[in-house]
Image 1 (cartoon, rainbow, N blue to C red):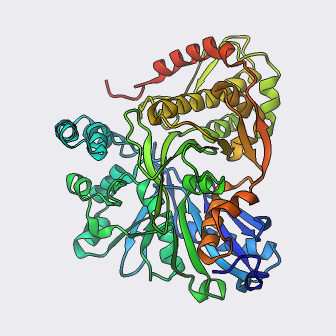
Image 2: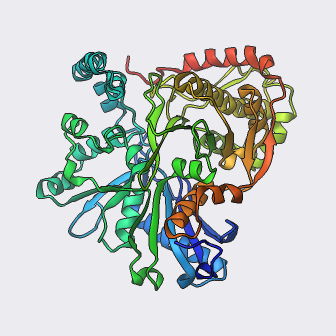
Image 3: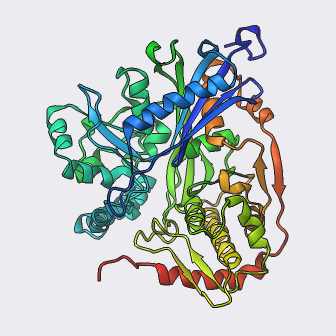
Length: 522
C-alpha cells in the first residue's frame, strides 16, 4: 500500500467503535489520529439474580449501529468516507445463538457474572484437577515445555468463559438441543457483532479475544481440545480464529448504506496496549476503568505464571505474534460508582479534592472486592468491606480509603508482574477513566517508584482498534509512524514517599486477609 500522505487516502477516515463494560463509544479518526467526531451510549446491565450480570444482545447490536452512525454524523462526514472499521470489545462476555436463524438463545453472560462460582470451586478442588496438576508436573519435568508447567498450576476463574459456558450448556435446554443438531454458534461480543454486521456470513474472532476466554491454548494457538474434552465443551460451536489485523468481511450495505471493510477485531485491553504504542518487550500499560488491568509486553513468548497472571495474545499481525502477561483487579471504577450511589459524592471528579482534604484515611481500609480478589490472592469468595470505621470517620476519609485501595492493588499487581516475568520495565503508560484522578495516579507512581505517562487520548481501546485497522489498509504505514502520533498529556514522577505508606499498606493487607473466604460455605 502507498503512504498515507499520498492522495488516495485524502478525505478518508477510520471509524472505531469500542464496546466497554458500561458504555459503547465510537470515534472517527483522521490521518493524524485526531478525533473528528464521537458518540456514546450507556450499556444497560441486567441483574436477574444475585451474582448474575447480563446484557441484551439485540439491544447491544442496535446501540452499536446507532453509535457508529452518530459518530460519523458528528464528524460531518458521509459513510462513504469511512475507509475501514475497527472494533474493540470487552472480553469474555458471551452468548450463543442459532446458526439457522441468528437468534440468540440467551442474554450475554458478562465477564463479571459469578453464577458459575460453585462450579469453578468444585472443579478446582476436584480429583480430576489434582490428577491434571500431577501428570503435568511430570511431563514438565521430562520435557521442560512451559505449557505443561502452565497446566500443572492452572486454576479456573469465573472471569474466564470456560465454566460460565459449561453452566449455560447444562442449564439452557435450547442450547443443548442446538448443539446436538449442529445448530449452535458461540461468540464473545466481537463475534456476535461481526456476525450481525455481515448478515450471518462470518462466524469468526481474533487471537486477542480468543486468548482471553480461558478455552484457547495460547501456546498452540488454537482452541484447546483437551480442555473442551475435559469439561464437555463442543468444539463445533467455536468461531474461526483470525489475525487481529484481517479483512473479516464488509458490513452489509443495508446497515450503513455502503459496504465498509471490517479490518480489525481486538480485545479491549490488548487494543489499549496497541493504542498506547506499547510495541516493545518490557512496555507496561495500566488501564483503570471498571477494573484495573496491568499488562506487560513479553515479546514473542507467552509467560507462564504461578501467581495468577494470565498469558494472552496481544495481537497477531501477519506472522508476528506478541504476547502479554496480565494481572487484573476487577473492581476499580465499580467501587467509585458504588460510593457515588451511596452519596459519598455527587461527581467522581470531586474525589481527588476530597482525598487531598485529609492527611490520611484515619485508619480506615477499603477492600475493593465486589467480584472477589484476583492475582496474586486469587480468592473469588472475598467480600468488599470497610474496616477501621470510627465516630471520627468522615466522607473524605472513606473516599480516600477507596482511592488508596486502587493504588494498593496496582502495587500488588505491578510487583508480582515484575518478580515473575523478570523482564526489565521500559515504559509505563496509563489510560482509562480513573487515570484522570491525579490522586490515584500520583500515589501509584509513588508506590511503583517509577514515572507514569498519561496520554492525551482518553479512549485508548478505540484508538488501538483504529490503529490496527488503519495499518491493515495502508492508512498508516508503520508502527513507527503511529509512535509519532502519540502524545503524552502529563507525566507523574515518584515523589519518594512510598516508604511512608508501608505501615498503611501493612494495615490494609490485614483487612484483605479478613475479607478473604467470606462467601465460602461453612
